[in-house]
Image 1: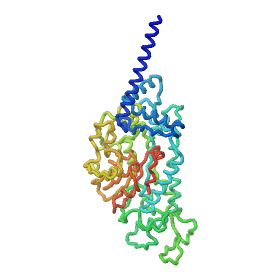
Image 2: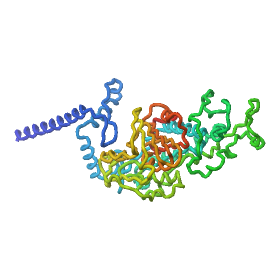
Image 3: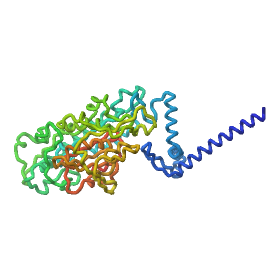
Length: 479
């Protein structure tokens, strides 16, 4: 009996050592692999931390080291899959920030995912930029489009115990309020000088109001601007309403011409702050109306081309019913970013495109951190054979992309964007001869450095997912 007990203990020790050796070997091999990112999970892997006495005593070193070991273990993808199935078997429906709904995977956002200080910084940077552009080309030519996430749109489908954040619900209103204050400080001269091509102004009257009193140059090169095709009820009206007048300006003052005589006191007229309402487009109500349709991918956080089509129709209602236009399915088995986090899905996605002649013939020039390359299409067919099939649109995300189309006009659009914009571009090819896309996440200097010299945009569009905008740390380049 004693010999059997000893043998059992020996077997247990040997088994434990084998597991320890196998695990250590997997960790060592994984660490030596040199991988810095996971293609399947679409994220950067944690790096092994440097040895630091303060981090050791604070516990941060242990935490970072454990995270790095977990990321670099050999067979990590298999372990993630096995862990997910084990949790599902135990009845768990929220795994690694992803909620498993009846039909779709939903990436969730908690209140702890957002920092109010960063949100305020981002709102200020965006509204400063929009107000400056409004002063240059008119407020009806500048718009920001905010796209709700699946978590926001399908919140009612989540169980009540899920503490998802509602912070994004108010972000559009906060931007409008802040923008209205900024617009009220833009003087009439800044915009009217763009409208009267025959009026030659002195240096004292040129330019826009800025923090630099010595600055008298326009942000954009001065060229003639055609009427905006951004549909706006007031587009044919004077962009300055009575409400936009300085409070100190009475009726008698407004009837008088503003004199160019330096000795004559001037009464400044400002852009109507109410214009801010139409400069910020919250797509929440539009997408909620169609939430039963296939407007978001089931396994990815992006909207589908159908969701982007609804956004296009909101921007350009005169375009008609593009949503029910002809489409083509280019991929049948897309598994997106939500799937990548847990390696589980209930339904695969399809990648579809709308048949748009101007998009089918468009060409691109990609600026990848200074490396420029030209492409004969806005679609990247090679991406359809990879795990990230969403890169079919524009080949992915880069510092800047110039799109040249055969649209029947000479208009130029500048877009400040995140990845949601990529599937919106084919529709915009119908409206603009040139589109310049700038992704702040990949630039390293002012946004104006990525607008080609001599180009003055007719319209400026900012497109962001609401939650991603609140978390972004690159808005400082909007200057």
